[in-house]
Image 1 (cartoon, rainbow over the protein chains, first blue to last red):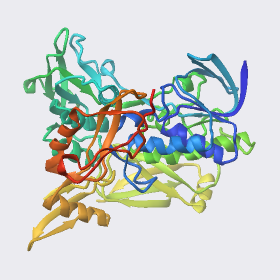
Image 2: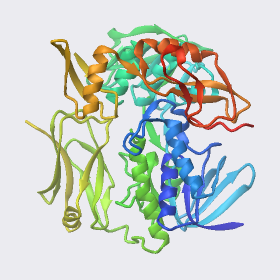
Image 3: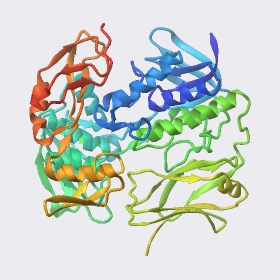
Image 4: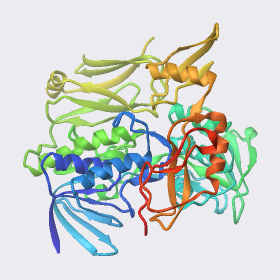
Length: 420
Length: 117
């Protein structure tokens, strides 16, 4: 049986929850959330540390508390949802095929869809570290789930590869649960995690951060017995003379996140090779009309408050599309191009002259400078920064006046220029 | 002394110095940063988050936090007090799990709803 639903939200994490509420509030009452896990809330449920919500709620919350606030909003609106539900396929005419243990296969025919599937961790297979395949190699997020939700410790003597935020948070978490956390190795000359996590997770707990260092071998047959680490040169090639053996029973990997876009690729949504997510316009509409994307499936965020903000835009867009106010002309519009020191921009294009914000990341750590938006060489908007790092997303607000000028431009470039 | 403010994701790089018995802070972008710098040099505090076992609830663990920051040196005692704690469902966000944990004056409160099964 095919059920007709105005808007289906794929994913019940922070992105999906905020998008569902925004869609409902914009007048679409027939919204449905599909969630793979047994609870709503997504990855926030295992992020039990504090530091969430300062921008959105103006107070400091833990992950589960942040999630609960949005779950309460969903319940308040009586927005229906199905958990333990895996979406198998979506089609360009907006059918959603999913399966769950109670109802079997369900098919929804929707007017609009919001993609909010989040992201996945890169794993050992992505890194090609030589060695046997002993137990004790975990992605940091898996270890986080085991410790915080399952009540199980993955190991006692821990080396962490990668200094992304999850790796830093897990360094402290494992230490606080009694593990000997020996070090965090980072192949780059800087950490991709937030500066405050370097302080409160590593420095506070006396855990060394080894920059320009990677794991070149994993030892042990049944269980990890140790790893060999080595310094890397400027081309990130390990330097053999610097090899060092570190005994440990556990290696946690915090080596990046990949937006989970199998469903999007299945219907040939245009992707941005840099973000790993769909290309979207200012309403977060993808190249397939009526399909919107937000949160970590669109680009990996460092702060959930930005996810909520972005998802409200996508939810409103999906509602407008249902109400036939959608912008069908998704092939038109003006492209926003990353220039000097800018790695990517979301949205990738604008289709209407409206005030909005551009979100972007720089390619490497920068000292003081200016963010400059130029249209055909003319400076239209700018913002100063004291420092900028790839781990922290930046925002540049665009006024209606600037947006109008952009719409008639041929070449729009955003660059981050360091003061000489 | 160089510090990184941990009060928000911005992570301002602070300079904090003792001058005539007063802590002088620079590099902060808001008043909270100044207070953080002063506290960090006089009596540093942290919010502690952890999880405890829960009986007869949906899910095995209950996530918890101190309802206010505690002295940094008391963190091991707080964690010790939580190590063998087991609580019973149902629990609502904000419920006090353990009052005045390790003599810090802070309460351990639930950060998750755990329905009974």
